[in-house]
Image (cartoon, rainbow, N blue to C red; front, top):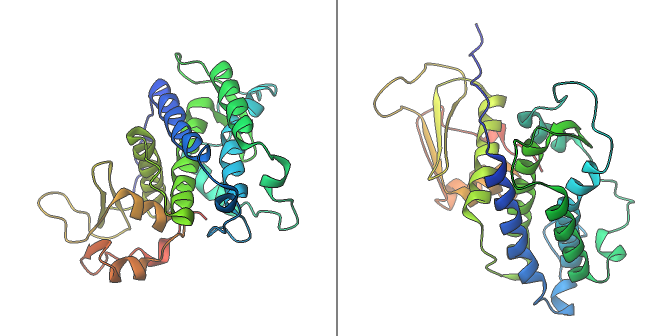
Length: 265
């Protein structure tokens, strides 16, 4: 009999909206100080320059207003649950012939201002966030889609920091939501209770079929920090490298996540 899946985690609409705006603000402030040389620098995202990455971050948040402007999809329930978003995004292949996003937006600060103003006007600070959006991976609840924006923002903030050696801060709630969604995705993809994955202080999940842990210290434990977990889950670093660099501790014969990572790229 397959392991029973746990009830999906619930996210607060207002807190998630606040976290998204805070992280976007951190990136916007950093963008305002970038030089032309920095904007032309390479990133770890293929042929994208920093300018392309910065434009992509803004357009990712801008997708909220874009989708809200479309008619609400019919039906009482979303076609895409939150935990279905990571595999859907992983399956989406970026068109190699598509123009780089930075080329169409020479004034990046103006772009950030427009996106932020539209978001503030379109996304209410109160309410339940039940409105359905017709996103590119299926209809989603507004609150759920905002959680995906924390992933986009946290992951690409790390990409930007890596490209330029910056220290753009992470909003605690945005980092928490990103970490939890990616941890829950792992548990959903490999259901079970034989391995406990800890990402303090934000997430603890059990995964992988086998003998279930009930009390005391689990026999199979994986523990790492939030940013390392995000890099593992998105393919920014490899399992073996993280172990060798002591960025991950793994105890027990089943505590090997190499075959399950990355969760998305």
